[in-house]
Length: 584
Image (cartoon, rainbow, N blue to C red):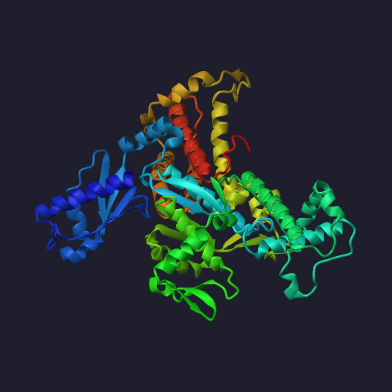
């Protein structure tokens, strides 16, 4: 990667300058770091290394340090200059042409790397209760989580994606009670959900259970014959199980449609049935980390960094949510994963210390757990934020996908840092304008594909209006691109064309370092940011550099560059699980 190369030759120059005592009081033992950045003024160069920080060791002005270090830099086909404390590098064709060749040779593996070194990661996200449709927050976790999984895999991690299903609590019984009311309504009973707000919280009154009730009446006629307003526990369990299965299937179908695929759906009930919850409780008890207070059982989590101890068994003997979560995370680590990454809503921030405390208490390293806390999504329509309720009249993920499509929904959900509240502009996401980021990027890919179609299609002579043969036969195009003389890209007598060509190639090369940084920082949004910049560089190149011309040699070289752009855009969109259309 070019940034790493620039840093390395600068470090070698510093070492040589030190050996010749050109850096004042600085010594080889002084510890420093360097970064290669893009100069604000591109006339200075393509990369800039700021050596001003060395002043604290050298006791020399930054400008003097930059000049003294630059004198030792060895870089063929590269111009070096200094401005204040910056060393600037202007790269030439020997650095730029290989970028195009590498992309054409590697195709969709360009940018793939082994940064993760095979680390086994269990990535858990979405993990919604099977009690209703996904809301738009779930959509953000689904898009972010699946994109992060793709990004990590592309960077050499071994990723296992898991969806944890909270199906052991009262919410499933409440779902069964709610289905009971909806089924009775289908059977003609005059019944409705409680009006009292406190009682109503024990139900799911949303209309989404009406189709489930209709299916139940059709599937279970014998059960419905004997169904009354008053039901026993066995009937309630049956209704609850049916509702859970149907809601979970609907969730799975939507996840598939949303290009989000899990390796495993882990049921909390299975965790209890296997005895793993009690095993964890007993393990904590054996380590003297539990005590009884006010008839409840408490975990001494404060001994492991939590702000206070936590209840794991309530006064009625039932477990808290935390108890199963402790067992679940312990089970993850016992399955042999090196690292656990969870995507949770920001309202779970207080939960992180509790789980890390339990991991340490159960003799694992708490640093194996990473939690990404995601902020909310605000839907904006015609400049105004839409109101949403969790249980009734809510805007669901499915509603949003139906309105703007899978690609736009995914891209918009990923476009901001997960720590940032996202304003999702519905009208903008639907628009076919440059202001819509997903359209802007997809159109760049479609434009590249259009150029290839034109290169292999008949042309019309502007003056004679006669048909001319295609510039390239489809069968010869690939060979023409692979064997293009890229040197001719730099023989053009047009400074603006040369400038945009160089800028585009450098942006293509940046893809490799961006991927590593995005994986390292668990930041899929960096892929979106990069795509916006690459699309912008390509659209600018298209404006100032005519790709198809009578100069077949130059045309082949520029087509090779366009092909490289198409490859990288498609690869990056693939990481986001967004389509790269060939026509728009």
